[in-house]
Image (tube, rainbow, N blue to C red; front, top):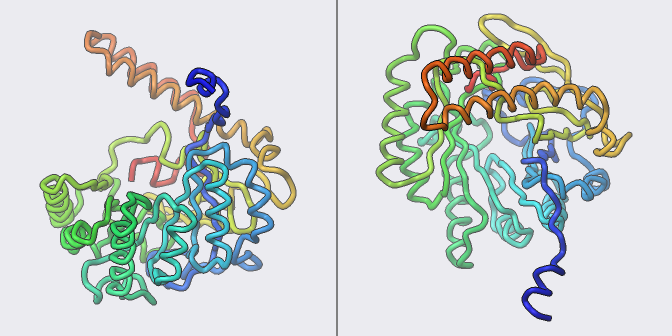
Length: 376
């Protein structure tokens, strides 16, 4: 067959209109992190694991997203069928990622990680020293986790492969901020590809509210900015991927990272929700000194309906349309800002139009008080 014949007879790739489907394969965890609701809030009758049979009903829809992320509020490595699930995702051409507390990074699981074709593994850390990390992330051992990371990096080198990408998710709190620069250095030395420094933005109790760094008024402690600045300088010097988030509010965003237009979250019980932050049976939230408890935002359950039926139900469409309108307004504003010739008047008019569009498409109440929509 000629080159042109091969070109025009190629199998057509599916149009992947979602960025990600995140699936909570496990809602239970073997750690007791001080900042995690899984430690404190036990939901009655919630399944611990998404059954493989139910996961298999989602396989036809893995052509929708670029990524399928196998993680929710629990530890995915506890699921007995995790690697089979990863293989099913890969068979549909989507990339597969997961976040782990790192306690189960043993030789057997690391071998399975490569064999199943996982594209990204993120390991959660909260301190450079065992005394800090093991106190904040109870029932974990920092040195054991770092040994596991080193084993993954070594296996990549042995196999001469760039996959999986190794990422660190560092929980930034008043307890851990001072050890951020040291952790970043060690991550770089271990062969970790990317380092993400995340705020404690799921603020579900008083302890979490007291321990978060970001603020809606005033200025954060200068020591926090100093630690972040030191980490940024280290990353810049080493040309190392380092991502962090602001500690002071600027303004409400048009949409957040869990943008429901291109993101789906599915719980271990099969509930289809907009994001992890509204996925639990009860979602307590501390916001600007006010405490509320939000119910789960579910649009349906894959035990009862197909994902396509749920995606196309009217309530879900109307919810997404709010964000679609806000995204369109933001993109239009960015086009004006990207133009090299507009006058000050054009800039001002475009901003007025943008804010008017946001006002015309107000956020759902449960999103209006979420820290993520303010960039934290």
